[in-house]
Length: 517
Image (cartoon, rainbow, N blue to C red):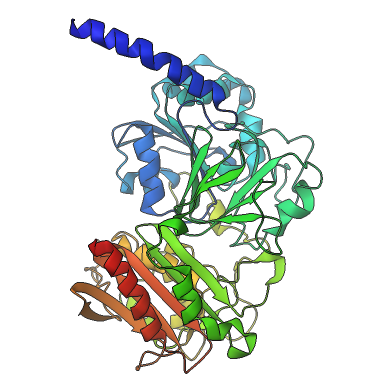
């Protein structure tokens, strides 16, 4: 039998199965990948997922900054920088506010060579006004049809849905539903998408405004730096925090109108069910966590939170004795804990990370990106009136928090740091990526940043460990990293007698035993 005949026979067998699978896809793309990001700073895992889905570093990636609202963007627009730093070698900026131009063959010609389309943040209605119903929109769809990837962040995330959330033609992000702008580009069919939901404390908005009006709509959201990676009807959560489902068919979180998903979880958008929990892979049993934190189930003990993660998957993200927070905010994000001696990690970074260069011309785009503009409800957006910030306070809320998207972490005037397990996990992920706090090598004070400075470095059961504790004797709080295993254990309490080091050690033991198998 000839090689050509065997190939033909294989195609004859595979093609019907592929066609059947595509026909069964009802929400996501029959071919290709859709990546939905909740705004803010993205980690390398999201960049890598998109670049791989586009065809690799040499693939043509088209960056669409139109939602930003400016008239002109050049080929070095700010949105291209992250892609180039992540290894993309062929990034092209595509933009117009002229719908007639967007409907021309000459404008869409470059899209025919693209492996990926990326929509930047801003305001969703700009994308509708420029591209809806044009040859450009059809060409975007063709990228998916030939197996490429389409993604976006913030406004660029919402446009990916069928129902357009916050599509009103204004700068008022509080308008959830405008009848003139209800139709997105529908790469996820029958879905409405919201974003920035934890950072801006707007988890309640879909539940209050959209779900009662559209009770059959599948609504999803995600926090900043967090993504849904959708192939077919299956979505995998990656990134720095949580994603949420409204109108799913699983039981919702206790007392909340949504289901929470974590990095490493998988969800079927068609059946509206969770198909896999990263927690099911956890080498750390829930029974162990419950036994370690039993005391803190009583709110009188002061409350405690714990996060355990490895290789981008969140196994444990629990709170004990923490009351429900306003606007359904996660009790692992609010309230903030005084981290005690862990603040030395922040002090060490502030001593090394320089002030950013003065703002000036930004390469073709006026103003700041969507993630840095008015924060909306719950966003930081500026300090309240009061005494001027100390240099340390400014560093924590600016130089350290901005690259990793920490919005709640803050420093007090006397040098204390207040944070949460969710936000400290963002820091841990940022420290895994050497580019996160890289110095400007053109400056006279340039040099490598010692990411182990401020930590206690030792060897624990044969592996290198970096740790920081609330007190010198390991009480109150613990922040432990096993870099070679990409493992993070964070314990925060309001209890000065809490044996945080012992608790973290017991959790670390379970992780290391499992890794050794």
